[in-house]
Image (cartoon, rainbow, N blue to C red):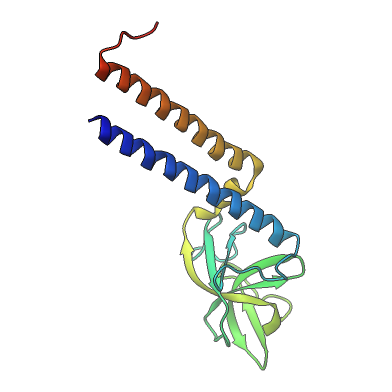
Length: 178
């Protein structure tokens, strides 16, 4: 029993450490990407992602969803793409394809976007929509979310140590301290 608890403790602490390390690396990467360190279109293994903050693509893509995009060579009518429009990123459907330019429109919008999108502004085609995950990603990118996860991990780590210590004393038959 004691050996099993020791193994579980090691696995638990390793898992907390990996999650905390991932969050630190991800937040540093996100801050560097926002600062322009990776160029206009920061990617991770050829993919990039964004949290959806408007309802222009409903019902297919809702506010709070997370879209994953992948850059391709060309795009066709009907593809949902994410593109850079000034300082913001927009996810809309291609409704008309021209020579190096695309006309887009949000599924929930009544009219096409006012300006055509050049191929150079396209981040990529949406290949995956994770419902509700955009809200979670935005929270984790915030200082409050980051500290909540790291703080929660520390609390769980301490509880793990206390529980392990309690079980070891109980197995040895030592009296409990009040």
